[in-house]
Length: 293
Image 1 (tube, rainbow, N blue to C red):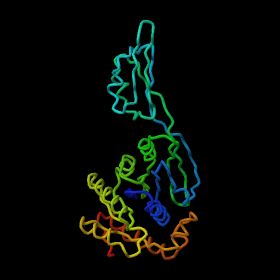
Image 2: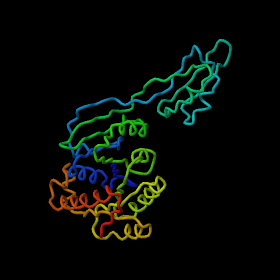
Image 3: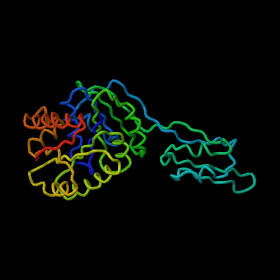
């Protein structure tokens, strides 16, 4: 079973939920797909056992074969190729390839009638695999300034072990990285906060999940029992609020030190244990989990 932890915006507490759930669960793998700024390792402190570079394929040109016809530029949907033909007798043309715009679709290589295009590897980041106690841990780190987030997420997800219960810490938002991270999940927990901005971005995330047809539930983080703004929306849309996490000074202090709530606070440990014992059991059976709030 794959459970993704997502949110419509950053800072709602996705990683807090992911790491605390993972710590208490048995036979679990945590996959941090927030590759632009992964931070699950700051809380779990895994021992990294394997590290490898991640690559994408980018096109290159064999100028001995290229006739500067411009076909590669025309078929590139991402504007990653520009062809400058020869301007006069004795002059040479040029093919400009903008690596950071290339999505490695392969159209230019496939459709080049001169067979002048070929691929070479470009490094985009690293993937690290290890253990945090009993937790199997995987995350990716995108190179600073790179934009190939979806490609690295796909490579990180190749290390998912379905023999485990898999928890994916997804990137924030509703753009391509998030879709790539949660694709294939059995269930998505959407973490939100009881604020107007929290509600606005929750709506976007819910709409995305409806289109993807993935079952999902709502977690309200930083709850102070003044959650009407989220509750009214969930009631209207018939969405399950599966958990409320209280907002306390104790929780803020624990988090600020990079520690886990379920280790430092008996109250929060009990909260997460009860959630796991009811929620995980129900979705494993294919049931709709409803928590009385």
